[in-house]
Image (cartoon, rainbow, N blue to C red; front, side, top):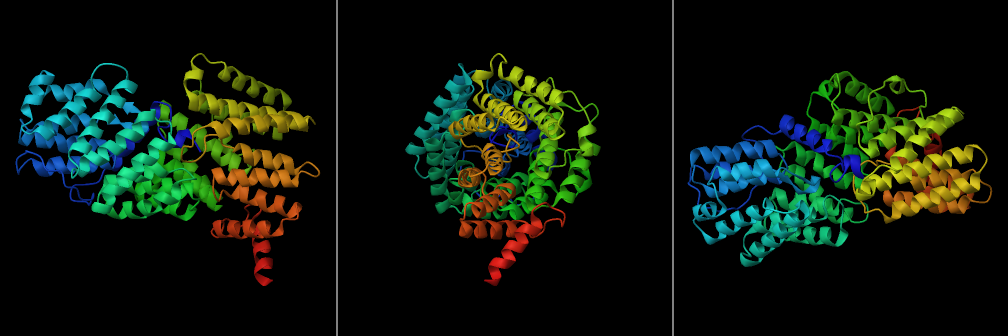
Length: 531
């Protein structure tokens, strides 16, 4: 599970979208954000704003955190840790974002040189915090500075074992070490550190937030379920806290929770929704629930509310929303397909999604020329200069290219070659670090492989294995559940089929009546219950 909606939404414009969410949905003063113990030498007048800034920061409400730290600076201009806090709002490790210039400008307000700034910190511990942030925004590449900063936070955490903030910021720094690509051992280490803080302070927002980030892939998500259940209650005043729980819920296929929490995160004004991180997850949740009419209405709301002309991040969002909707509903003539916008300046993944969608539809319409044209676009994307340096984009483009080529080959009767192409795509998928969120590869490769295998005589057992693997990567995804049920029945594995049908009927208990496969799932579930 990957990138548009995941770790950093690997392209830069995602950060703008997420920052806009934080700016628009930041909680009002007086709302609950959790509790922390972070003593400093700040005055009694300035410390509350400082603490509130840290609380906001732990929930990635960066604009609100910035405002609170600046309040603390205004109250006490010599409060060194307030400037530390302001500088810290300009690094977003999970999103692989950092604004070194603004951070350095924030620190310069305290004093013009590093030595003078450190002299302003009255305690040894606060000097170490300031020194760590100086490292973070010092010289060298971001990767080098992130690594040195994390080591510095590790030293502070070890030197002051009762400092819970040192521990949680160390955990967050570990998550940021891989520059937005999941490194499982490091993420697990970060999760263990965050859990230690949670055991000492069950109301700490950062402890549960970073635990969720550490474990929000399908394999490890059960380890983060307690944190997901706790976070929205700890920080009900942070919109991001409401959404963040769904990183675990989606990884476990808990679609009702995915929908309800993103609705809360977005707020009550559904007529104002635009394509952003929370609303795109909501759209995906509706589709998995089988609530096609709600998904269609939400997509139409996006089209109505996007700016004209659309900025890059909105065009990125609309590309994936439309592709996700069409590929999950099979509505190859959906009215949204008539809407066009510039794609040449979008990320390789976004352009790849658009080309794959158009090419897949062309195959469905038996338009060979259009399918070949869209495949040529994917081939060109795969040859882009610099793509090899961006693993997420490179892998997604490669998978989408193989998928479309396989679909085209299969339509022309070359099924063996199509299967081979999909197996190659599956190898790329298996070698890709697990991420989170709705899949950028809008037709998951193992799901597509299973569907193709089901059309071939005697290959139902192979199809069953493909669907099982698809569900390991995307638990309780309805299209894969339906495929598994059909493949298992065809292979004579009726117990597996019955379980898959029952799970599917549960996922679709609020589904629209016309959802393909719904009657089949409910009938199979009723037959099993009657036995």
